[in-house]
Length: 199
Image (cartoon, rainbow, N blue to C red; front, side):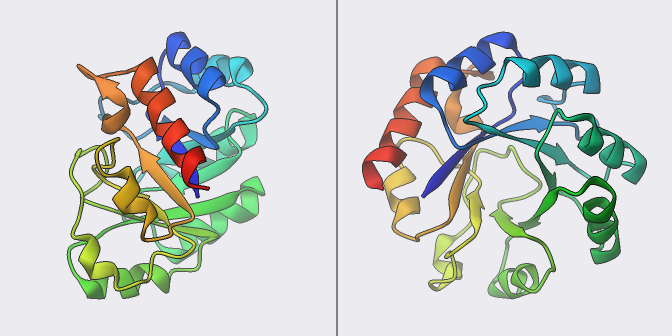
C-alpha cells in the first residue's frame, strides 16, 4: 500500500515529506480552497521535492487550459481531477499533458462506487465530499472493491490500519496530517511509518 500526503503549501511541508518519503504528495490548485497554491508556488516547491516522491496536481472543475498548462510545467507528474470533470475532459488533459489521470468521486452509496469504477481514468479515488472534509465515507459500501484505488476522506493515524485492511492501492491523507490547519511533521512521519510497517 502506498501513501499520499495532500495539500502541501509551505517550504516546511516539503522538508517534512522529504524526510518521511511518502509515495505521493498533492499540490492543490482548486479555486477557493484553503490549501490552494499558485502555479508559481508549485514550481518553486516542486524543485525542492525529493525525486523519490511523485507530485500530484489536484484540480476541482478548473479551466482545462490551466490544468494542461500546469501539467506541462513540470511541477506535477500526475493529474487529480476532483470535481465534475467529464470523460472527454479527462481524455483531453491526458492527451495534451501526457500525464496519468486520477479521477476522484464523492461516495454516498454503492451506486456511486460502481459509477466511479466505470470512469476511464488511470486511477480512481473514492472520497467523502469534494475533499478536505476530514471525514470518512462509509467504507462498508466498498464490499471488497478497494483493490487498486486511492482511498481518501478522514484517514489519520487512528484508522489507517482499518483502511489498510481494505487493500487500497494508496491512502490519501490531508487533514489527518495536520495540526491547526497546517502540516505536522510528526503526524506525517507517523503515517508514513505506519504504512511502511504494513507492507
